[in-house]
Length: 595
Image (cartoon, rainbow, N blue to C red; front, side, top):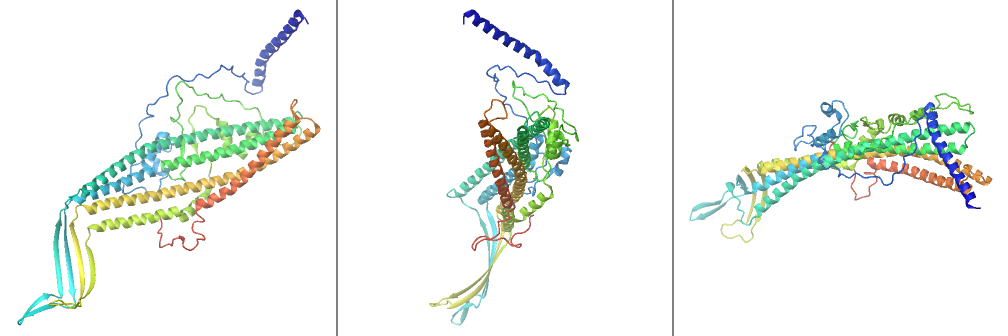
């Protein structure tokens, strides 16, 4: 072949390529017009790749997000903390019936957070111990009386003169004033130690306050992220249902194989499982937010992302344009060839996942403020489980016992400035008694000590005892909230695990049917798609079948683990079947009811 012939052939190829390109470019507007006329969004060509994505050159802002808001509720006295986490009814005047913003969430937490209340109570205890150390330098004044009654007196006789040596009734009263002398500096060292411990307690309050602001914001953003992921899962489920509807119609019309329907059904089951997981994550994220804020776990919290989300400077957020969904068959329409009435994909979503249908209609993001609430309504069964846990979880009973111990400590501190009494009995035997010493003697003694001025020691002890009682009360409230959150998480896991078992069973059945059809085609030496090896198609379906079998096993045992987790969250095995020597269930007299 000469150069002219080669050039002619090459020129013909170039002309053919040019014609194809021009035809394709002319076909794009026609295709877009045809899709628009059919109610579909025009298909736009992919953007031309430009290489490496240009990164923002300016540094991200490091200025404060804004001033820390004031507490939403009046702070309780350190000695009188909240005994239970409040619900939204205690915040109605503050929220005015509107969803909670991120700044309001921080403000609520600064007034109700349990960890902050615990730190404030610990500071009260430290202040009391510092004051107690200071009182060691103060003088003390007191009166003590000792009244002794002997069984007999003692007398001495000298030439007819009798002198009493010991009366039968012998009272003694002593008034005493003491001024401590810190010769070796021990009292000063104790005071310095208490002062530094108080300083550390104050700094701990500041540290926790700073930490709370971040924890609340972090939990708030996690809720918004979970809500966005739930919207993505709902959109994916809606898309798979549309694809399944198209595959079913194409199969009924005889233009696509049954394998497409089975594959679409598998995609729907996978999307449904992903939506269940996203729904569970959103509910648990809201529970974590309420826990960090210090609200009741059962409070129906609603939040809004208004003013919460910002985009980095120089990096505009990409928001996909809303797509018009393909026209689907209305309810009750007869499909082409089957003669059987079917539901449209939208109606199927409203039936199997009502919340997902609403999210799919709203879209992933459109610039409007979102209101986020808990997607799961656990019903009265959850409340019964919480009450069961609160009656038998050892953490609750332990916290109640600590409250009673702290109350006893407060009683002891109050008694330090009261008179003390003592009654003694003695019997003395002196075999080698000589002179005027009695051979044996019995006595009854009554001791009375009346502190007149203790230097402020009793007041300091009361302050420290009030702090310890407040710490115990906050610990009880913390135990109640943690147990409630534990039960909620376990119950949600159980519900979701049950639903995932159902989804996994359907997915496995579809994977088995897809593998059977691929095996039939492989035996016939054909494949579903032209140019695809039958053995490759069979291998792919076999891999999918193996994964479906693994998912079913995982879902089944996840359900059984969830049941065991619920029993542990309820404390059902805490006081059952202990061996001798182990702690047994406390009696009603030993553990008083919750205060």
